[in-house]
Image 1: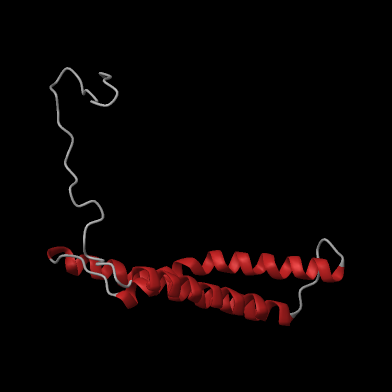
Image 2: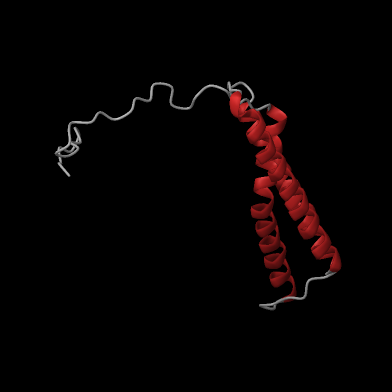
Length: 136
């Protein structure tokens, strides 16, 4: 149980430190155009997916132990907790690699909606939506 708390604490520290670095970089790069490297995107995707993969690996190991022990609330051994941690990290890495494989040929600096135009104002009496034609 102690290794689980240590692993959770390390995960929290790593995530918090990467967020602090991100906020510091945003302050410094306000005058520059944002660009994101492939390794930075891999790091972000992997760290963000880690809590979700932790929950999924816990549920998988718990379901396997429920089926094996025949109880609704099975006892989890230290080996089970190690399996949960290993599965969580492995699945998070797979999510990061999958994202990298699908975005490696895409220009990450290109805007997602390149021809976005601001809405037109019709006047002070209300805004008219052209598709629905409702005045507010």
